[in-house]
Length: 450
Image (tube, rainbow, N blue to C red; front, top):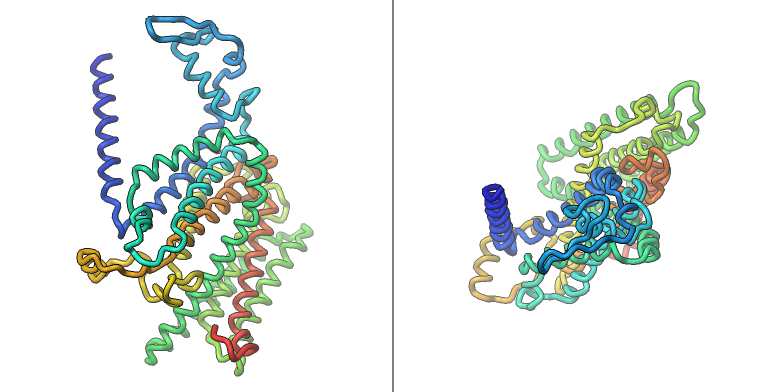
């Protein structure tokens, strides 16, 4: 017993030292990656509450712990004891008391919605506070620049404390956060669309600027491939989501409307007055087709027109984990890309500052400037960077809770249910509208720069 205790102590000390070393090695270059890791950790905690904590807590006899305890004194120590024994009474009582003062053992639905929302709320508060603190930073000599890139032990400690305290806030606060999260998630999806449009237009301009036949051929090949994939994918959508013998009018409308948008994109882009390109049109067409698939695949599993999943009434842990991992990668990339994009934000002193910089700069000039202690303007807005993570926290909470409508089987799955369907379709329509606007706006307002 003594040897096991010593071994456990040594392992814990080594783990703490490793964490301290890892946190201490986070510098200016890796700060954004560290924020991504912290955000991914919050999503993992939410997933653990959904899938692990529910059956674990349901096995704890909170009802028996709620009766008066017999206090036993042993020296300077006090123990709570009743029918479950001295060694487990106090820890289990603390666990039961710590989950929002429940009058009974929390059910699974609480972990699938309320617990996830509370972790998300803690994440939102943490990043919003950082966004407020970092507002107005113009150069790297600002003392707050060191807070953004350093002090990771203190920040991680504050993050843990804030998330923990969220489990004690009143239910009304959580309900209010749930309501505003729907709007925050929509804003985050809008940012994603703007980033995509900026990416495809920049991609097209970059290849056209080379003014070589090879790159023109590359533009044509990529465009043709995107259209082939788009129409092939559309055929699969008809096969999966409009099965014969069922009235699937809503699914048929979504798929046909998506194909109409594909043709509209090409017609508008190739109009002589627009002078556009097929590459952005083909990429946006493929993305809209994907959004249509994502929306249709989010339909409830028992819906007769969901031919992709209506024969699988349960979802495996591996499939659920893969879906969550994809969500994490998408949300993290969007948050970092949005925080670094000059399309969504501008550096304080330059409207296009940072536009040509990579996502994670590694230039030696920055290192030399730091060594010479020369004040350099920031390459992206720290405040907006943290604000995007705040919005991403709302979006991830809505995904994990099925947009807070976890009823029946849909509540046991990630991003399944009719609200998820309409969110995807609305995102598709917003993408289509913004893309067409980006083509016709210069024609309608020739005096303005777009």
